[in-house]
Length: 207
Image (cartoon, rainbow, N blue to C red; front, side, top):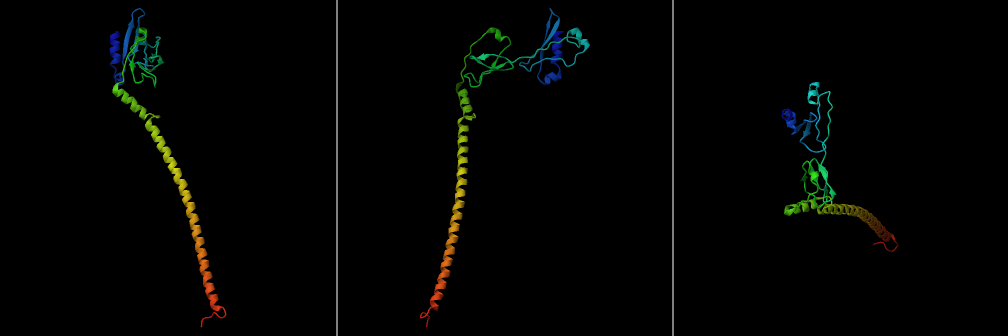
């Protein structure tokens, strides 16, 4: 019966479409079935949407009490620092020496106690870390871009200041040029008046 239930459930096309599967167990002492998802993590959960009274004989029908327990993300420490659990994968904290490792923890590993592993990033790992540092928000490239943008903003401000000074200088030169033209024109008119006056003075008339 257990094998048949497991085969029928895992053979469902909808479950196959989302790559979901369960393991069916049977406790002879209690006469109860158990359904365990093969997925890990807090999002893993087995539940019955439609239960009929005919399923009561199996212990999970409409009139039966079904206990559901959601999955849990793996928890643990890496080198004394709390890691981040995602399903059965335990990740080191950001910025730690072990950052970059992905540890897949099998069920029951907690009972075995602490264990030690050794690893080396190698040339590719060091290169990846170096590139990540360059591309980070506080990396060399980001700082250089920020400095260039600051310099461009300063150049734009200086250009605006220069344009205002040029406008004022142009206005002042134009005003001085107009004033000079007026003075020259006034002097020319005065010169013409003096020439006519000399011709009209006594004893200066041309013969």
